Length: 277
Image (cartoon, rainbow, N blue to C red; front, side, top):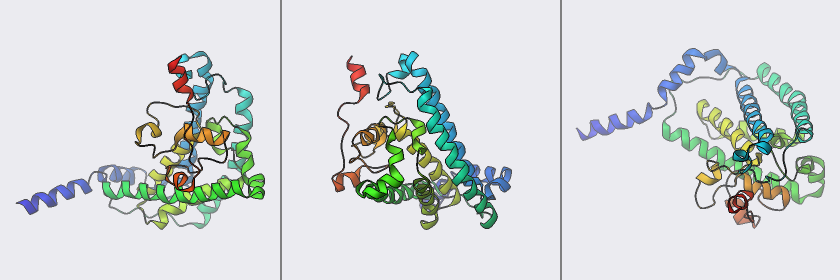
């Protein structure tokens, strides 16, 4: 009796994602198998998030309920800020991402879709594993491209033309940085042998966090306000990085900055000042 209950309980947990996976396989089989799908998923996620934050940026000066959550409520985002960053983003997508997507479509085989969904445990463990690996990779890349003057000038300086990040600054990057980030986000789930559903979810979460880090808002539901003990970076810390470029290099967690002596806590967020006023 006890053995059957335990087996049934474990089996039920394994099936949590199975109905979702079955639905996706049955209704979007060809789309999911296409080598283009991860690219389309990431790009679509990015532009949807950027569109949302840009609308908030344009409304914020006349909507106090939005402006009070901005890290720099006295410095509005205007169209002269938006057009150059949007132009570089579109340029990068046309020059780098589109050709890479076509190459994947031509040379990569269709993605195999296993009949079994990942267990809930392996799903979240896979995403966490990808986050930990990506966090370490980008921390080293980021640190190196700040410490070596030639690397900074050649590849990373463009991203720091804005010391007040907003969502479109997320991919205001050189082609080399865009390639590096995209390469790790694609390869890490393969290295960790993640289920394709886990890999796609990590890609979406990675885009979400990157955009959130640059959004310029300190919302109560932001990831850094949900993860306890200051373990997460978030928009305030990355905003500090753009003002003090020798600090807060990691994209997700704070432990590498703690260990490397590059961690800095934002002095006093604009949100706090707004509330005190």
